[in-house]
Image 1 (cartoon, rainbow, N blue to C red):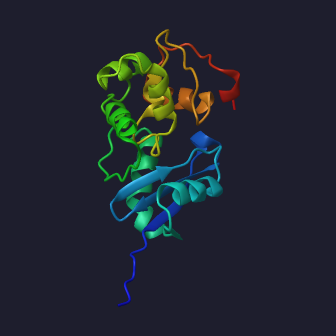
Image 2 (image 1 turned 90 degrees about the vertical axis):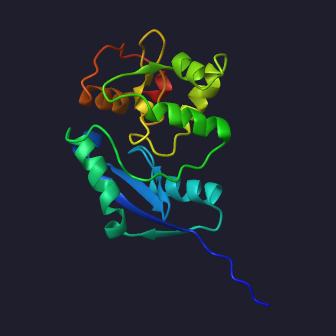
Length: 188
């Protein structure tokens, strides 16, 4: 008997916006929902590598029409016309990572939480570094607002998208009560 295994299709499209100096973000979704957004410092190869690791055997298909709803909500947010997202997500990670990502999604627009706050909210108050690692592995930044997590001392700290982007996103949301400093490797 010949059995065919179903191949997961990942649809993707680029979003270029002035907030990111017109460098593209790549957004990708499966039939279940949005699964990945890259930062402007990342390339299409970043998306391809992520897909190969997280969804082995998946096929990437550029499809602006299928991605239009996701990109519209991202664009509305970046232009200050949206504070919440109502799109399906297909987030893949460990149980700990998904618990952190759920906690991030609960941070209201224009507010922040510390890594310690998130660690306590997921029932692991000593896991501050692990929360930082899970935060950095967030596959759908902006939608799941990892930029709203700052240091206990109000410092921006590290950020995969770059501290300048983190600062821009916080300012977009009207949040200014932070210290603009962080690890040098995130200053790009």
